[in-house]
Length: 437
Image: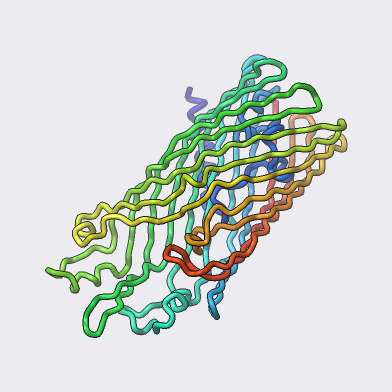
């Protein structure tokens, strides 16, 4: 028990040490340089340690104790334009990854522990005056205090710790499951906008910088089935349950105290409130087919469906008595996302101990125009992938590269969005190491 606890804590520390992780997509598109370079079409193959993510039934194929580590480096680049105003994202490098150890027990059972950065979304903009563009035709000097460029950045994601078990029912049928212990975090910096106070002349009160910072836990499970009728074909199905994160933290609004003198009794209003909110990581269902038409060639196809519609809106509940007394009890963040289906395909060709790989996947944007904004950006990605690998004995070394080409979006004004012209792409180099004994 002590050894398992030590391993658990070690995995958690390793994953938390990379918690600068995020890219500009809500759920990361998979792990393992081998799987990713095959277009992330791995549910029907799932024959290495990354099966803990793709299809836990595949872990039952491991014949010996296996430790694996894979790291991704996400390098996003985006531009935003509104009329004559334009800005770009700051250059950032966001690590993500998966680590795990899995041990056969007898001939039919494999147990182990994995950890990975399941979800990630974020943006870090080099803002040089977005606020002035948003309040046009007003001059920023008409506001109290005057509007200046504020920080616009976000970091939203989750880390999953996943005890796993997989069983070989027969030589052709494998099943597996993980219990998912999820740690989520949600931090957003943005302009808090303004309110109009009906005096003569009216006062445009600028609320200044706002920061929401919450963290918390959620729980779920993943179930997998893998069927291999023969050495030529295999197919698999994976079901990951939804997980609701119960988050708590703080909301800061820089100039909220300035509204006090305009209210009855001139109350003293703090700039920070404790808050709570629930965020759901959606259900994911995937099916995959793997074919080996000749001995050295493997071809994979996946369909992966995400229940994004579950993310209708997020409600932030403020737990400060003074904020509640002035009517600031909660705030809704509308999403109105739609369910989406990813299409993936890839191939691997082996030359002895070496392998070359390539793939493609289409990942449609879940966010509609009416809720699109710069802090929770959502794009349709067409992604090409490639990679190489070397495996000999119990040691494996894989390199991969993904290039996510985001389709540009032109967003018309609506109540809950930030209008403008959006462009985005992401480069993701990947490295995996495997040790078996």
